[in-house]
Image 1 (cartoon, helix red, strand yellow):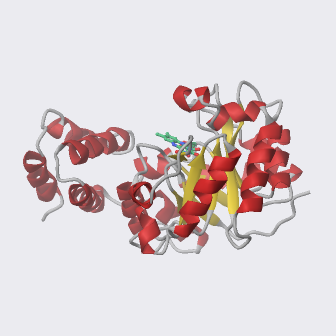
Image 2 (cartoon, rainbow, N blue to C red):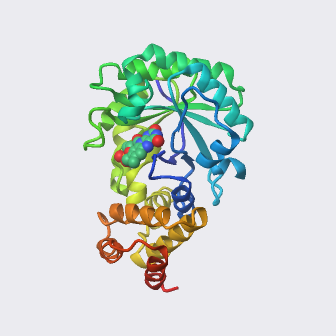
Length: 325
Ligand SMILES: Cc1cc2nc3c(=O)[nH]c(=O)nc-3n(C[C@H](O)[C@H](O)[C@H](O)COP(=O)(O)O)c2cc1C
């Protein structure tokens, strides 16, 4: 059914607590992305203020773009269709020009309140949420959705995808795992193809792309031209750049650790600009190095060097030294 011609697109995944505005800023500066998606903004019974929207998605104040100019989509998570629509309209009023809906979050607190992946048990509710938002939002604002393959199993995957398409979403991202599979490999890329073949909206494939080879394999298996990078984007900060170089027929150059050291320093400085208290920049740096050490032994060494340090003033000179600054 899906014969939509798309050109290759690379999207930076929404990742709560990991791909925050500073990480989005950094990764989109390094380059390769056509779009990024905000961490989910949770919608319960209230209507968020402008200040709250800007805290979650500061890109709203910059024409919906990151510093480097990459478009940023606002992601909502919730189950109360009416209040989600009211909030979506507020986000649009404050500048959002594209809204994405989260039907995949596995967090127990979110699922307990009927948000995220638990909705995959009820395709009819998914349909109602998507349809309500589509009807209430201005027609020029694209509405998209992101889903997992199901909650416990894949038995409702096609129904959920159909609910999203029939509800009026104009594109769908599929994280190729069920909720109970968490983040365990493998991602079932063949299921993305089944979904892609069953709906008439463009589908973005997502799950377990950690290298250029994985990217080529997910495209081949899923048949999708659009791919979303999650953890791999953080572990290898130049992954999207490598992929773009490949797609543009350029020679693919992997960043060496000297270049990465410059990005580590920039990241730390951007964190310090956001919050001058030590806790945020130090915690974010340790989190990132903890992930990067899977790919770079030098990140492991740096992690060991700073592990016991708590003050930004102690850590920054080490980073500056490493970056040759
Ligand atoms: C720490 C973390 C936070 C996440 N937060 C979100 C989120 O806010 N919204 C969402 O739709 N998906 C979220 N995800 C799922 C990712 O967007 C992505 O679908 C998943 O990580 C699979 O892609 P990957 O294998 O490339 O990491 C999160 C994943 C991780 C690891």
